[in-house]
Image (cartoon, rainbow, N blue to C red; front, side, top):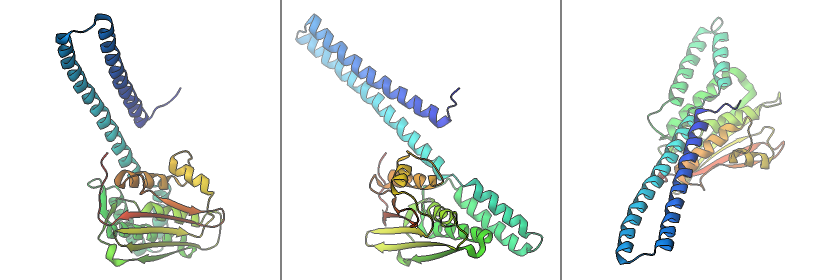
Length: 280
């Protein structure tokens, strides 16, 4: 038996609503054409028909607007759901590391508990869809500290940040998932040190945010399929960020991925320094 998620049910409801609107418009137009063809129409009939047609047009616009609003609400709900996702493996591993430190280094364990609490508090915020780049980078720093507590010197992270863009607004949790993806794949299938480099540079009216790792890389076509939602795997966080960027800034402001097998991966985005949010 097929199990539908709440989002799946909502999408089916939306599809049904759109189908009803299309059928309603089609049926009314066919009925009007049939009336004119069979019964003819004098001037009074035409005038009456015009009034009916205007009322029908108003109703059609109402239903169309209802369908569009429903679709927009569903997209917004989906994006909020994607934004709120935190890797359960990260939570489990962080708590494991903290627990292991309690008997031998309780001071360090306490510090990591506070970092973990601050990171999760930030990640689960629901009061805004945007934050400053400085706040986002604070969350990245906490994430890196927690991961380095686990991997120690096996992971090296370097930063190159243009200070003049720290106050710009960026979509909430648009950078941290990129760092998470880079750290995960920078260490995959290797015992060597993994390298991750995060850079933010000023390009006039825009800022370019780039996260690069020296890991195993991936097939470029596969990554394109991930961003299109045609493939699943451990890169799903990139898909989530890409969706939210396109929703916020338009279809030409998604992620760009440069990669190849055994050649690492660079994920970058170019966004306006002064936010202009697209409608719908």
